[in-house]
Length: 121
Image (cartoon, rainbow, N blue to C red; front, side, top):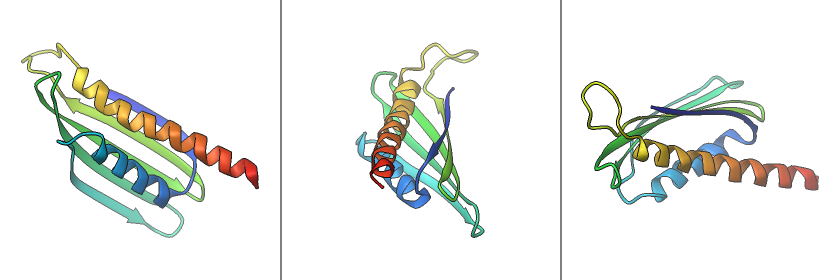
């Protein structure tokens, strides 16, 4: 299991649509298995479960992405699982780590773009 959590500034809807598209477009085998969305007016929460085939590991891996947003503050949690064929312990995490990198890369690109746009005003 690999995990990445970060707090960033941004627009919840713009961020979630962008990261979902980015994850799905990074791999031909990536799919959005299910999602959940909550909005009470002040707080939004989106949970997305992705799955893809890892060619390097020869198995399927999943990525659980949760985004929590209030105003322009976002909390992003991405956790991967699967990716090992061992019975009692993990012997490789190549697929998990690569899947997680897709989410991390999008977060960093979004953060940089948001800060650049914010500094213009």
